[in-house]
Image 1: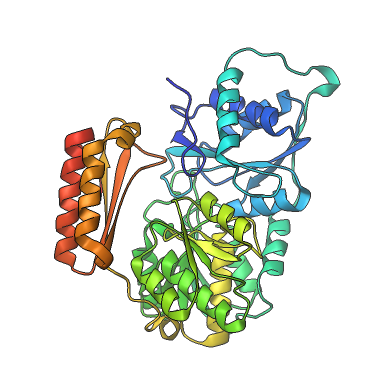
Image 2 (image 1 turned 90 degrees about the vertical axis):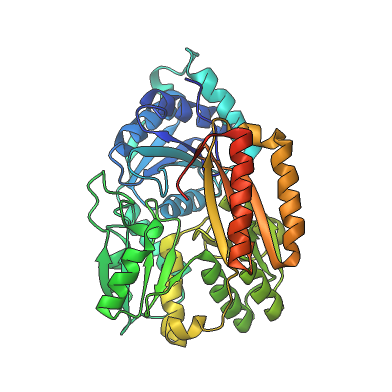
Length: 448
């Protein structure tokens, strides 16, 4: 089996099958060989395979002479903030929103940011070399692995410092922790800030991470918010780098809504510092709302790494993805779903009900996402018949909609997104594109 490759969010695969302890060990060695750190932070989510892979990765790093600090179960934002604070790189063992059978490895720089694609390519090369026998340190030059004594307390202190001083007294918040890394952290943090908290998805057993809960199943959160008559709710994913919200009436608010809320609030406060960065997946309605408000929008390829790079390049403070990755570059180095949820709750505490804040905020253009399962996603780039049909569809829609076709960075899927003001036209366009992709590259349609 060929070594795994980096996708849009690290390396990901089925644990102990595609992503093995042997691979994790080679990955740990490769990170040290490429980044050359004296110290490496390692954190993980609650997956059953997490401790196994973290141990192997740590052993690989130590075998290259690097000391490893095991942060245990900690949200991605906590690992990233620790890297940035202590100026050492790190690795997060997590497959984010995937189910528990999968796992992944996400490397961070000493600034707490995702690595550049060129650096990831170097790590891939070193992983391949590391799967063979190579020279390594011995004796006193071997690294050690030790557990951090208080990673959660350090992370929570950082969250409180990044948030505004606004208290949440009198606010009823429902938090869905996805049975993941935020389970033992987010509910207590909200209570510390004064909120009345109803927590769901906060009992991880190693196998229930993202299972009918979290940011990929917001309908569960919506039902609890309405039944509990809560003011708002928010759901994170397994490693807590995403946030999807729900208002008191049960309306689900994805990353586009959150970006619009935070952008307009910061614009009103005079603290936006430029415009916002979004990905190609952000709804046309967000673009129109920002244009009306006089806020500049820069569009980048899918992936929060591209968002972070654009924020650094422009010096802007806010960006994110429709999926719920929101980056506050003046407060954190990467997307942090817990921080996003806390800042949203503070916004409600300061300005009133979330339903009122979102009333007329933006008008989403109908959007349809379809996945087509293919044998080789790499073949999409040279599929001329597909791209010819994409251009034909774009020309037909004009300014009334958008078409996006791309290969998944984590699965054997081609993802098709169509937006159109007319839903019938949207569905017809998507159906035609699916047929073209299937004829060119595959023979089965995946889940829509």
